[in-house]
Amino acid sequence: MLNSVIAVYYYLRVTVVMYMKKPEREFAPLSLTPFMIVALIISVWGTFHLGIFPAKIIEFAQKATFLY
Image 1 (cartoon, helix red, strand yellow):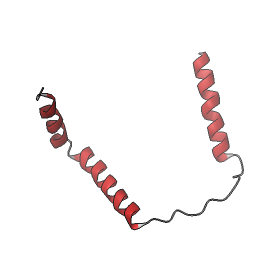
Image 2 (image 1 turned 60 degrees about the horizontal axis):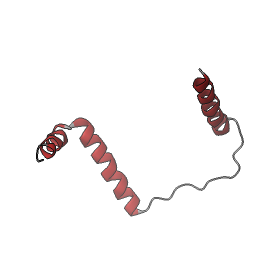
Image 3 (image 1 turned 135 degrees about the vertical axis):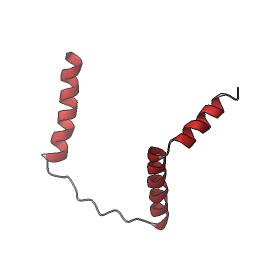
């Protein structure tokens, strides 16, 4: 129970700072370079590919564990 109280305090504090306090400074919008866009596209493609078609990766991992 004590851990739950500590966790509630910790996470509630983060929420209060995020939503109920004025920002200390303004942040500039993020400018995307071509390399960042390519990295994002590859990451999104990999995430969707692994989420929709995981069989090839699972098969590869199973074969890799049987080598030794």
